[in-house]
Length: 212
Image (cartoon, rainbow, N blue to C red):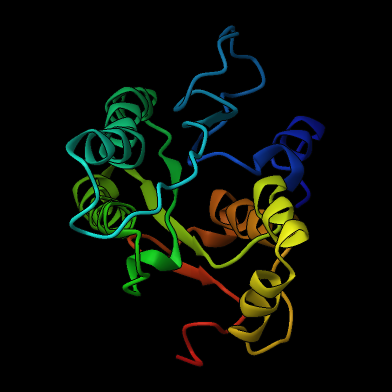
């Protein structure tokens, strides 16, 4: 079905865009007195905001830069899981967790060593959590977007047409992705339609890796 109006508002792609991951618990019964909208009880909880990567070669990437990207891409995801999963288990209705990875986990994008490594680590975390908590009805998946026209990326493309052309040339469909196109797969993974899908990384890259 279409779900409640609250479901539709929470799962609108414009609302989901820009988060590093999300969790959705099963809704409480209509007669429940629970009012908190926490993972495992009801509603969609954003994980953390995505931070832009730092561009530097492997030997130029400092310890501070490693620490920052590890904190954003891995430690924040782990901290969120520690809070969300026990709530889901206690509620006894299962739930969904979706992490936002990147095609950088699959390709050695130059000058992004820490970003690449932590996104690959996030995918490993996704698979591990899927195995550990599947028995509790908790499905854990990731999406791996390619080049998406977020505000930051759009500004880069507007100021550097050659870069925009490079981004487009790497896809098989001749354009980069929109924010909605990266967020709708999250809607799917948070829904009952993805009930038998867990431990997976969904590529949303316009065929970029297929053409590599």
